[in-house]
Length: 92
Image (cartoon, rainbow, N blue to C red; front, side, top):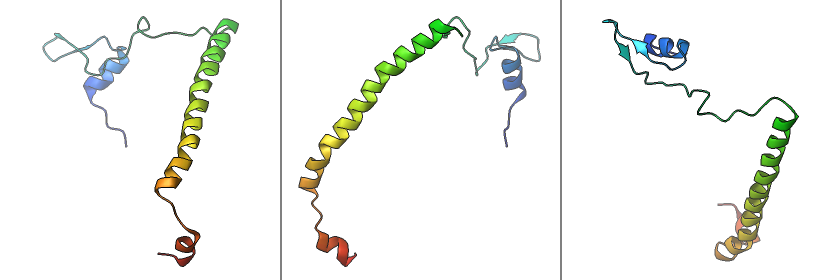
């Protein structure tokens, strides 16, 4: 169940510009929505698709490198915490 206060609702409806209290004065919105000027907008065109593809290509190298690091560390982990087949077959 989603609970939302009237202040949050007004802030959301006014797109983060703040709210007006009971005395009629403007209040800063505690749940400010980022304005479009602070967000990077990728166009819905071929250029946007190229941008996303380039970012995806670069990030894939980081993911693949991370997987390689984990796989390279497995023999080292096995050396320090060696488990025999006897231990596995005997149970606890």
